Image 1 (cartoon, one colour):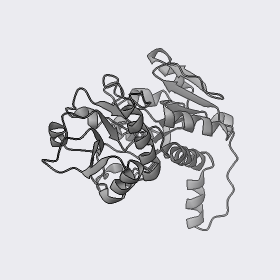
Image 2 (cartoon, helix red, strand yellow; image 1 turned 60 degrees about the horizontal axis):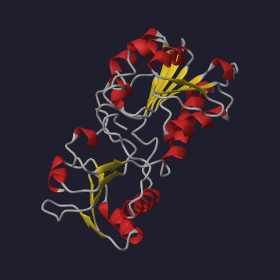
Image 3 (cartoon, helix red, strand yellow; image 1 turned 90 degrees about the horizontal axis):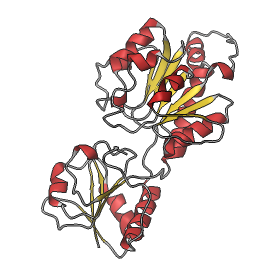
Image 4 (cartoon, one colour; image 1 turned 30 degrees about the vertical axis):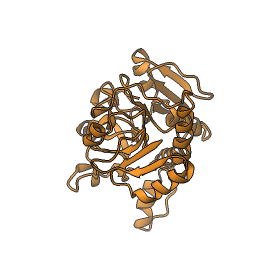
Length: 306
């Protein structure tokens, strides 16, 4: 069994060592042009040349949460595309989103500004009931985030393409319930997969449907958000602010308006990082299951995009 590793921008040696330790029966090699054909691939942002050469793969494993970049390439039609399920990302995402929600709700940015000018001023306490949170996307990460937020006594709504049931979360499903979901939401968290159907979903029309004083947290993909629509709604006062971890162009260009907008908090795509040991353990377990002819979870539907 041969495994090819092709992860752009990722130091390969720690991954190669971990994969070899987890799968001692396999030949694990760093891909280079002209390399022998492999059975399995572990990838992140690979070039098209990789798949042109590795045309007989049985399965492709991605070390990130999203697969939208891969689906823009020509993949071997017979190869299963398998995404990571959590692998340590869900708790990180829950931490990040909870911090962003609580920072806004408790007005810590205002206290920081006061501190800088030596002001001792206690702001009026706010009611959790006045800040319903809506989680757009209830996959593995979205479900963990939604259920974590219920622990802080916020009303929590969730929306997904198909019906879900989560304890403590008011779940909405399908296009027919999206408007009601938005209208019920004051703090919106985007955790959708990026597909043709979800690109630009955070536009003026939909963001305008949030409650007045709404707040946007995008930790999914930059292409979900129409940048200029967000800025316009912030400047008009309909939205109170945003925390953004993902962008259409990364790194975010130095001249981009987001950097200096007073109502936008920017972080450099760090909401949920890939954890190597957890990811390798999951990939190794699935490869062994496939070798035994068993089915595995995390299989991507290429038509749906996730």
